[in-house]
Amino acid sequence: MSKVATQNKMEAIEMKRDVYQMVINGERVDSESKETFTTYNPATGKPLAQVAKATTADAERAVEAARNAFDNGKWKKYPVNKRARVMNKIASIMRSRFNELVELEVLNSGKSLVAAQGQVMQSIEDFEFYAGAIVGHRGTVNNMPGGFFNYSQNEPVGVCAQIIPWNYPMMMAAWKIAPAIAVGCSVVIKPASLTPLTAIVLTEICHEAGVPEGVVNIVPGPGALIGDYLVENPNVDKVAFTGSTPTGKDIMQKASQTLKRLTLELGGKSPNLVFEDADIDGAVAGSLFGIFYNTGQSCEARSRLYVHEDIYDEFMEKFVEKTKQLKLGDPLDKGTHLGSIVSRGQLEVIDGYVKSAIEEGATVVTGGEELKLEGFEDGHWYAPTIITDVTPDMKVVREEIFGPVVVVQKFKDEKEAIKQANDTEFGLGSAIWTKDQGRATRVANQIQAGIVMVNCPFSAFPGTPFGGYKQSGFGRELCIETLDLYTEQKSILSYYGSKPVNPFGV
Ligand code: NAP
Ligand code: MG
Image 1 (cartoon, rainbow, N blue to C red):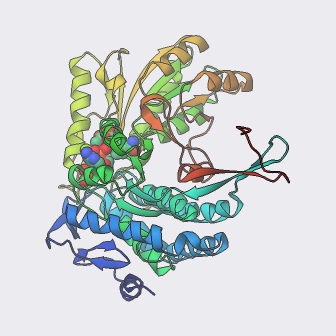
Image 2 (cartoon, rainbow, N blue to C red; image 1 turned 180 degrees about the vertical axis):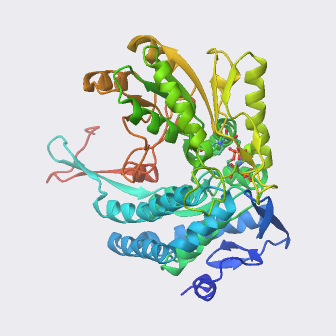
């Protein structure tokens, strides 16, 4: 058992610690500078814990540990069944610590209990999914001319830097770690500075479950410094990033220097189309969830709502009414629908967008302001916001807000709905509400987005490909094919004829 596993067992019950350390080469360690940074509970604005602040020297040690584990270690040589067993063990430890992980996620992100429960459960299921998937992951045998035999095998790509955002701190860590270690890669995770805690604990759990030292490392620290260092390090073979489109572009440019493998899951401005033949109550409920789930801080948030002109008034009356009924409050209360915004900075970004919409002539139908909640006065709370009277060129329609703000427009027919849906540089999610199966299929086929939800409020389960078209990035996560993105395909071509081949004939 590695040191971290022993330490972790002792502290399994104790959730809050003085310092959340990094994990490098199977050990919990302080930063070489001894520096820490404070992570907060965004619902209260109060400090939650201290976190070791990695320097580039720490990041270098983490990459070396991952490199060594990959080049000389045993993980990738384990029979797949053994790797799968360890991954199922990770899932079962997470299950046994479910409430603790949920609570820690709520405290560090401000999200609601119900949202955190779903996300921690999905994180567990991700490990189970990839434990199963890896056993069936195989190469190919290809048709060849007589005398030749060709097969291909999948080999792990190597050391992966995995840079994750603050909106789904544990789930993003699971989406990244599970497929990578399933195929035998080693990883260095850079969690978001706002929400590092659950990814740190997940890394510890990986060791407790039997992942050998050096295979899963985590280095919390400033993105511009540590993220950059990892992306430029020649010992890193692949970068998997989820976050903003500008940071994604920066990473792509830097990763090109060493031609690293790259998966980018970036921003979105997903359309939500409600047709005149939709089940109105179902569409209202799904549209509400589509934008306000996770307090709107989702890359696939359905933030552009388009409603057919014939049902616009009826739909909007219900949509506004239900939005006003959404409960904001103690995130640990199971009746809370929306938790807080992740930080003051993010709240100011959201409010800035709303103000820009008002200046450009839009109408705020409900919300549009910061809230002061009793008992949470220093937290970051924003009212669920609906904006109408917008035009397609407004900032609030074109840019990702990443908060509980939806812009609403009308359309008159299918053609116009599709045109409006595709009028964006992004292409991550989209939703269609209609009872006409033919229309659902036609529209789904024409939408330029990686994900189409038909009469469905949810965007993903383990197994569904998740990723974007256009500037929402490339590569798909959460699905079987993700395993291919963590492997290189090697072709082995051999000749088995009884006489040697002599192509030059000399
Ligand atoms: P971000 O800058 O893209 O951050 C995401 C991750 O990348 C964090 O771990 C961050 O570290 C790291 N990072 C930052 N700069 C980096 C760099 N130069 N090289 C490598 N890694 C770097 O996102 P943000 O600043 O937290 O949020 C800004 C906006 O991004 C939001 O308002 C939202 O619109 C969008 N966003 C999108 C998603 C998504 O799922 N698509 C998720 C989060 C945010 P630090 O935390 O230390 O900065
Ligand atoms: Mg940033």
